[in-house]
Image (cartoon, rainbow, N blue to C red; front, side, top):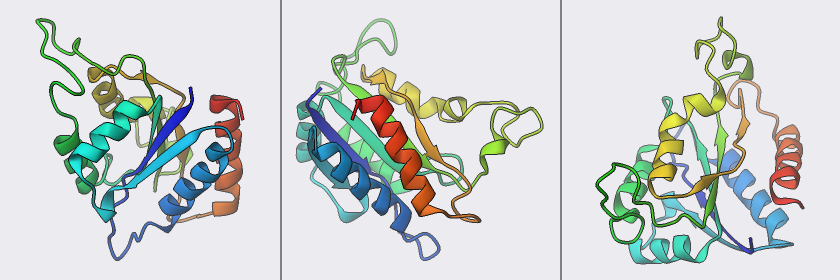
Length: 183
């Protein structure tokens, strides 16, 4: 692996201005640039579809940095996928649904920020009814499988609205990046 494409999917709202996701993205760029070639897109700043498609083709790994809004990605990030992930570039139609992904030599990593506390996952008394982080993100994992990409370990910061601790979050991110990317 030599080339990493990081996509910051944050969408600006007055109550969610994106400082944490920007900080995480910039930190990943700084850390990963020491060993890898890195390109970045901030979805909220606009993009050209063909340039984004070229970045996917160029990359060995795509990192999706996104807040989770109402249990999914921000609307502009969903629109990004709708516009960028096109047939013939990312997948081809097959007789068997979901088997036509064209990016089979690529990896992806989800990096998410949550308002939910961590204890709400994987415990039967929690809001997510015993489901793990990756089970809560199942739809995003299936989207990547559809285009053929292979999963790397998911990263998450929890409870970022009520108890934000950016310094601790960046330490956890460093540990994750060291494990996943052998830094």
